[in-house]
Image (cartoon, rainbow, N blue to C red; front, side):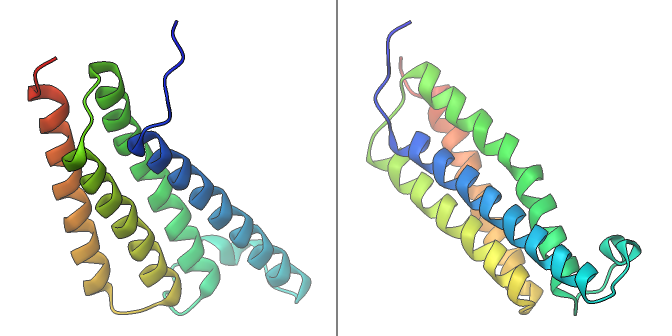
Amino acid sequence: MPVLAMTVPLWGLVIFMLWTIAVVVLLLAVRIRHLSQGGSPKDFGTPDDTSLLWRLYRVQANLVENLPLYLGVVVLLTVRGVSGAAVDTLVGVYIAARLVHSGIHMAGLNPNGRLISLGIQFVCLTALIALAVFSPA
């Protein structure tokens, strides 16, 4: 199998994975701090939007839920050999919106910002899928 060069979609996948790992490490640190201060493991699954522990848990779960969607798009683009300025721009906007979504959630800011970010991500993914499927080979 030939070695493929790193493309913008592949770099986006690297950023997505590294961000997910960073959030998991931060979540572990907050969990350890919580337990060391006498907190209970039962608190980990208790919905509480004022709790950084809960918000980090939700961010991590959301990243894990969305990673397969982006991975699928990257596979389609790579296998089909689809690239170009439109793909690179959509990937950049998608990854930026993904990071903004996580940041808004972690900071406990207005959830409307997360909804807007999610909408941007879905538009980007849909456009990338269309480019991957309908671009001439």
